[in-house]
Structures are given as C-alpha cells and as structure tokens.
Image (cartoon, rainbow, N blue to C red; front, side, top):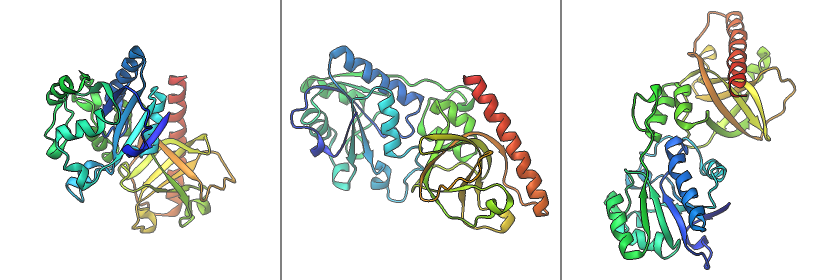
Length: 319
C-alpha cells in the first residue's frame, strides 16, 4: 500500500481512482463498511482505492484545545486500512489555510486535480470545506460537473453497547473513557489499543513480583478509565497475555497517570526503549488503595488469575 503525506506526494502520473475521505479515527466497523465498499468499487472499476484523512484532527485547528482523544495513531490506521485492501492512504496536513478552502475548492484541489476521482464513497454525515459547509448532496452535485459519481453508505447500528446508536468514533471514545473496553471492542471490531515506548518507572512491580512494562502513550491517546484490565502486551510482533493497570497508583500516592502491563508468567523481559502496544479485552476492577502491601499482593494475584481466565475464554471462543 502506498502512503502519501500531502498532495505533493501523489505521483504525477496518478490516474483515476475511487476515493473516500474522513478522519477515520479508530477504523471502526462503520468505517470498515465505507472503506470496504470503496475497495470493492475500485476493483469493479479496475482502478486503485484511496483513503484521504487529516493530521492533526480538524477540530484542533478550527477550535484549538479541542483535540479529541485518539483511538488510533495514523500509522495504525494505515495498517488497518491496508488490511481492508486499500491501495493508498493520503494524509493531508490540516492547516488554518486548508480549513478555509470552500467546498468547491476542496473538491477541485483534492479529488479532481490530484486524485482524479471516478467514484467517491462516503457516509451520510460527511462534511467538508470551510466551516463544514459541504455535505453529500453538494458532493454529488459537484460530481456532475467534475465527472465523478457518489455513493452514500449508511452506517451500521450498534448492539447493546451502543444503545442502538450508529457506530461512531465519539461513541467509542465515550465507552473507553468509562472503562467499557468490551463495548468499545464491539464497535471497533477488535480490542482498543494504546501504544508507545516502554520507559522506566518506579519499578515497584518488579519488587512486588509482577514486573510491568510502563508504556509512555502517544499524545492525545484515548486511555481507558482507571482500573485493572485483561488484555495483551505486544512487543516486537509477539502478543503476550497481560494484566493491565491504568491509573495513578494510589497505593503509593502516585500523581502521574500511567498504563502498565504485566506479561503474565513471563520473566526476564527487558523491554525498555522498545515500542509496545497494549490491547484491552475486559475490565476487571477499579483502582483501589489497600490497607497493606500484603493485601495489595493478594489482590494482584487474584487480578492475574482473573485476567488469565478472561483471556483464555476469549481465545477459545475465537479459535
């Protein structure tokens, strides 16, 4: 899959293509439906499929300080899109100048002059151009002028976790913030992931017999509510069952919020400086302060046992 940053990265000889545009944070099941249809339509037409997205999130430029928590960094989104069969991903730097493009200018500058769109696939709520003035109706009207067609894909409706609401990144962020990582996974189609570099912490977990990887998460990451979770720690392509702690470590009067993962049953791991991903399967309990270190150790052992049960049951169910 080709990856471009900015319109200037698009090859000069790029021909017609099927395009879909959006933030696509999380690449959730609604996004997968739209992107999957773009890939399908591109193959029907014998042209490549292109996903266009933005960096930073448009809200940070239009309303500084409102950058939403991110469900997936751009490299992760690109990996997920590649898995859906996308041929190219274009990340457009979203600047103040770019935000002022009228809907018509946006279409000409991006879809017509550079990507030579033959078909554009979007969800019903797609907005574009200055002050989000453009919608799918205008997109279709401009298509008659600039020789492309538009196909609008309705989003799925979520199950129990979403309360009957359409799939959306906003809903996933809400569920993650509440610690409902199982509900978030239902919408994402996979466990919610945070990632970053493993850094040195206070090393109390090692002293207690449960050494953890302290993951320095990327800026604006959507981090689950404080608590203990079952999931996986992935480093160097190896995914290991893990008990995950999110919070300030109240047992030791901590103040900095951290994400730490104990690779269950693994000893002697030296992960400092390595890139790690933490996948959240299920919420186990809230973050507590115990009366003694012995009580904490008993709780940690129970947490590991419960996490092992949840992970084993999940892996059997999905085998």
